[in-house]
Length: 205
Image 1 (cartoon, helix red, strand yellow):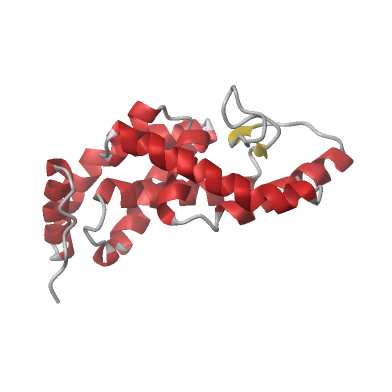
Image 2 (cartoon, helix red, strand yellow; image 1 turned 45 degrees about the horizontal axis):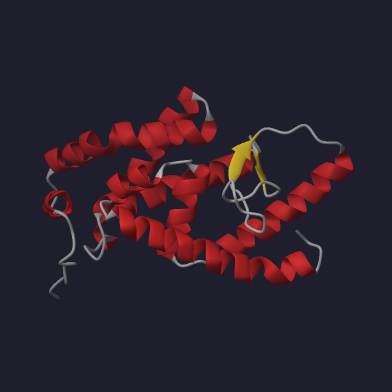
């Protein structure tokens, strides 16, 4: 079956796809080429999330291992880098959840000037049992809601508020125009706020 390629992919994304095709065909050098292209950026993203170089290195290796195991499922509907970063981010989030390294703060505004939005900052906290229980319930509600976002909007939220990337950095990572980043992020926050409204009214957040 012929694979339909997204005509809006950048030249680099199209080059990536050619390398992916060689890797799927069994070319070992192609796997190495993909690793060399993205290992450093994936590592730095992991380091921002877990704040530990050893853990970040392990998570980087795991991300590539998972991506390569699923390589046949990749389709050029979007850039390979987007697909790879998605795998890496989700893997790191699972790691953080299991290790309980940090808690998400939902008490800060999503933007400095905002009053009704929510922030996704990873931070360490020392709370008493009651505060810990309340915070954990809020985190569960937030993660449950975040999972309902589609891939595009969820990735935007993760990169901006988990990774604390600037709009320009997201634009470069995903290889999409800066205006598109701002528009999609605005829409993602709008959707998320509407989805969280019932929980806010019920006092769960």
